[in-house]
Image (cartoon, rainbow, N blue to C red; front, side, top):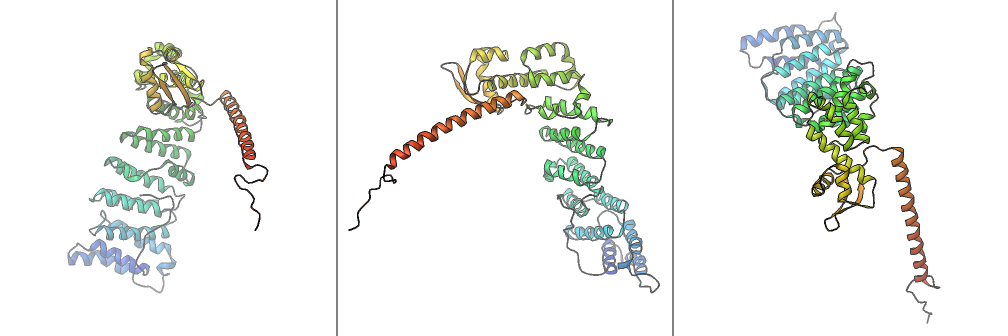
Length: 414
């Protein structure tokens, strides 16, 4: 699969340009009849005849391009060799193409088309396309185009996992590639669309966020990119942290949209505000493909998290929890367990006292107040540690005694 570096990793047979072109021509002609094979190879033989009035191929990119065009024009698919032979053929042709063309877009386009239209299993196509991707210079605008061909091929065959796609790697590529902002954003959208098609919405979500981060406010796609990220975040059952969305530079573009008000409820409010919002905006949920029950569940869990965050190191009664998240006391344990499973809170339920002992929790939005609370908590821990160290130090001095070594009595030399 594609790698980060644009270095050719193939090993080619030794020889001159003339010898290599002859090898390529022989490969393409191998399954033809003797007569057809002779006719096929003849133009190459004539083109490769040494001439004193012409610059040698090794010193003349123009002459090399003329011969390479002959190879490209006569290609039909990937030939009839073994996978190893096919790979060698394309690697050799790719190397000369990059070396001979100032702008290799057209010849490489022909190579890519030959690979995609070949009647071969996807595995060899992935390999050939990846070799093209890896051979291209790091900044080449052909890299994203090549990768999207690999992505679409994998998506078509329901084999997206073979790409081993990592966002950190994509971030690096986007920094390297010489493409426009709109092209970068579209690349992210293509990845997200493929992941959605593969039923992997949680993996698609970061690419929607990245797309919205990339686009400037004057882009015709800026508004839709923010809305796509927002709707996806609201829909995903695993997303409770909406700071990446509220922190988008273009979030103000959707400030008047009802879902922006819903976003603010997720960040700062609770069940009361949710009930007020949904009473007048339920149709908006439907139009955006959001399920009311699922959204309400997330609101209830983040509201519970907010209550727990305000009571770190304390206990909360079932009654207080029930009142805050608007459920019966009989339902409290179920909701607390769901919040624990979602890794929003940590603590211990006590059915006897009907309380929840809080250990820690996540934070919906880290505000200045949260920083102050954290600073206060750290100061208290620091004071506690100082007290403990004082006690330990005193105990150590007492244990060592006047000799300076615990449990050791000086023995006189005999």
